[in-house]
Amino acid sequence: MSETPSHLAPSLSTLMVQASAQEKLSPAQQRFNDLLAQIERLSGQIQRLEAWSDQHRYAHIQALRESVQLSQAHRKSLLLFVHERLQTADFTDRQQRMARELVRGLMAHLATTNDPQVQALVDLYVNEEDEQEAAEEQAEAAQRLRERIEEALGQRIEKPGQYQTPEEMMAAGMRQWQRQQQADEARKAAKRAARKAQKQAQKKSPAAEKGEVPAAPTRELDAKSAIRTIFRQLASSLHPDRELDEQERLRKTALMSEVNAAYEKNDLTALLRLQMQVTQVNSQSTAGTPRMADGQLIAMSLLLKEQVAALEDDMAQLESRLSRELCVPVRADTDEAALSQSLQRMQADQRHSADSLAADLRRIQNDAELKRWLKEQWQLAKATSA
Image 1 (cartoon, one colour):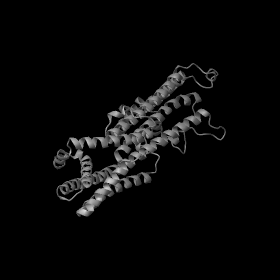
Image 2 (cartoon, rainbow, N blue to C red; image 1 turned 30 degrees about the vertical axis):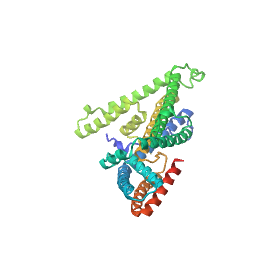
Image 3 (cartoon, rainbow, N blue to C red; image 1 turned 90 degrees about the vertical axis):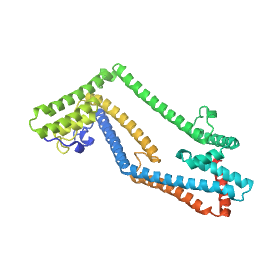
Image 4 (cartoon, rainbow, N blue to C red; image 1 turned 120 degrees about the vertical axis):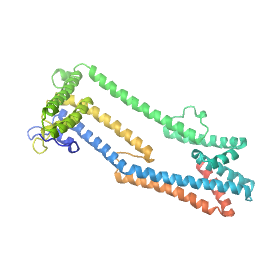
């Protein structure tokens, strides 16, 4: 016997029930085929997204890290330079306030670096008066941010008085958004469980009593019976102890391991694929799943529906994780070229930020330009927080 390697497993389309010239597909057969198509589509999207991520993730994160590190180095240079000019330059009171506010902003950006020079300036600049003034400004900015977050969430931030900085308010908004998403997922899961329980508990419908559609408990039993039947057939064909040839025995052992894993997970499509590999079903000769009774197909469709739901959850989790890691929105149904362009734009934005800081540092070596720059930064900060 020569089984098809796992990486060459047959497409799910070869498992579909095929219509004949004399007979169209029944609703149960069409539903079975539709679910197989959904599983193939979702599996393909997940595989493509993972492959795309593996190709681009490391280089993208490395590029972002380098740009961020460069930006932080430029911010530190700006911080030290402005601090030094505050001690020696001829600033008006207003310019001093603007310079001190800029210094505090740069220190906030550099707070996570734990740099001793930065920490020394933090200790120097942040006295009680500055702390109070900065706290008031931060609280005002936090409240402005709160309004935007509440508009985006469609609900009020819980206990907003606890958050006195934009960073705290943003973190609170993210936590509330995550709880909202988790609650939505829990409600969906509860609905799915309720529907499943209802189907299991319900009595035979009129159609079932007529023998047209099996009742829910019968469908469950049929599905389990179908999986057990396939498993036993595969176990019989692949039993490694019956094989004298060492190479064949190793191959059968590996395939049997796949069979056991699929059986434990009730993975019907994996078992059907393995069955086709073992029996050498060729799509050009005996394409499709052998004709089964509608009742059995309906039962097997219950398992396929669960696989669809599990794949949808897996895809949502993958999209969420990659969006966080790559700092760009990632969706499986987005063209790979468009996703790659998003990464390139993010990298370009970070490089531009570092280049802008470097240009600012070169510009302010002249006192007149330094004063103009301070005014521009002050106006920009006001416009951004408005």
